[in-house]
Length: 320
Image (cartoon, rainbow, N blue to C red; front, side, top):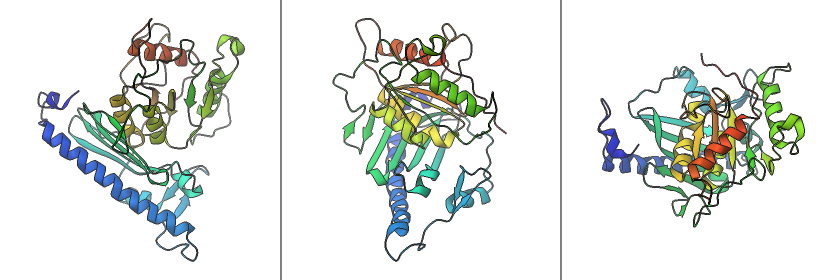
């Protein structure tokens, strides 16, 4: 969807100039929020300043789930987890993605800003101030690192995906907050999937994918950002929310990546590959890819999707 398409959507009138203004506003907002986040970080680490202006950190219901003062203010305003996004232009913002990372001062912490039209992200900005990295995109105008480096990082030409993927790929995935210790739980099924992806070729009844490496960043937004850079080949998540992924989906797609659901909707080899559902809570992203002598970039990305699906143990993340 481009800006010119918006005028044809019922109840939507959004031109190129308006889209540019929204994009510029999102960039500045992310920078300003990044400065506030760094102030909070410095308040924790500067000698004699511990506790000064530092967001309060508490445990939620789970010992791996943390809430900050920012979360509490959001919840107190009546926010809930019902899906509220419709076709109207909508801001979807996560002021702190990677809350557990923030608590431990692990630098994969970011502000994620998404803007949707027709229910799909068209603008995204992810600012990771501890890393001095900001990735951004506006539909039809490319994806960028720090506003100067076009994404993916290697783009002239963009490397094709490995012919025998997932072998040779970097997989980004998360354990999530569901830690129920019983067969069939999301924890067990994620572990099965990760083992399938990592095991030697021919192992695990033929499902061994022998990925090059597995990375767990602790932030869905950062996983999407690194997929857009081309630093991660496959990004897979289950259990996160639209505010975790809206900005990143816009960026990855604008960089040339592909996003769909993590659960195969049917036979992995033959079923239709659906467009990602923003509120679906199950996501699978493939990095931007160049064509090869045998297939187009999209054909390669969809081939990798099917190879991942073949190894997936389905996850269950329902909404309220």
